[in-house]
Image (tube, rainbow, N blue to C red):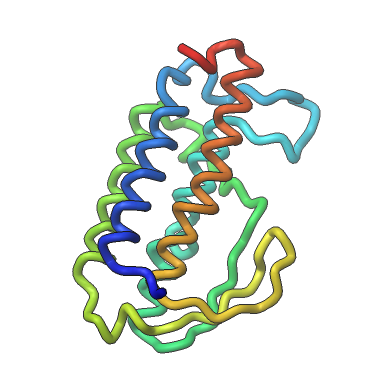
Length: 169
């Protein structure tokens, strides 16, 4: 049974709120990592900036590409926290402002596209889990972004909170 717009919007809201819940009160631990000597270890800041993506590479841009051109090739870029001097200087509140803006834009995009555009597909490459090239509809890409990708990073934040001893606060 195909996904509906309302199901995807609900999953987006639920995934976003769960992520925000785990990010709460981490302003003093924004750059904390389990192992500071491990260049692959991510801090809460890295997780947030990864989800925001670079201006040209994020979920919003991928979804825009699908509605502009049926079956575009969308290259995913896992393991890139998009560290930049700008995001390194941002406070948690500033990062949250950007993240909320992104989520609002995603919600508006999913809400406003035509039924024809909702059915368009993308050829997705670059899954971090090694999943081979697949074709997914606009709604499937939007749904997977929050039910898989954001959920994965929500769990990552929870693990950081556990390591800091603040998971249940």
